[in-house]
Image (cartoon, rainbow, N blue to C red):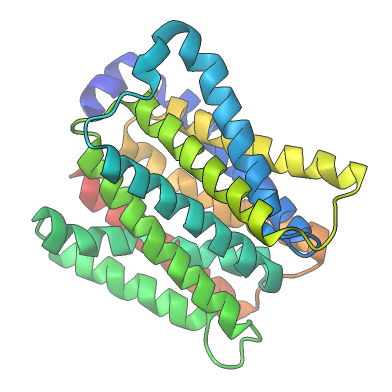
Length: 291
């Protein structure tokens, strides 16, 4: 598959699309931190998923009609969407009490967890380079979340829960892509997220109603997430995953920059070292996967 993409796509365009996507993701994370400190996480999340659902329907339903939501293993498809929705809630809750840079860096342990989980669940062998990347990744987590770092323990725990949920989401994605279409997975992810987030908002309610400017920021938050995922999907049509995987870690760099510009926070030296170790571990895991 990578060879076919390399022959028909434009790798430089793929890299540019990933850079743009990670900038949008980091912008969304920064907006998410600001909004989650003011409003219920479920209310903010509702905007993200409703925008996603509308965009999927507008772009795909006129051409594909009922094929948009046709599935073979509906239960697993819905479970996948629920895992992502709950993971996004944990992300917002962690951003409420954690700096943007450290939050984003900690959840990037997911590729390492995915590689380790693929062994017992998918029957894939974890080679030596995989164990090395795992050791680097966990060392990075320990450096960022070490005692004395000043990070909120509850926020760190939520980041790690997010990584576990994200691992489950990606494992199901790998399993379901054998039988389900990409558009069906996109639709049901948006649908499940919309139903769960809107339902939770109606049940829990919001502490306060957003102001008009904040409504605009909530809509911008949802747009950043949705457009970012579309750009990322487009990028993998232009270049092989092994080329693009390292570029994804621009997300950490952009999150660090925006966290400093907006909240005036920079990680300390050990925190930066931990972030670098997690990024290195992720790149090694991606390189191994591409082999």
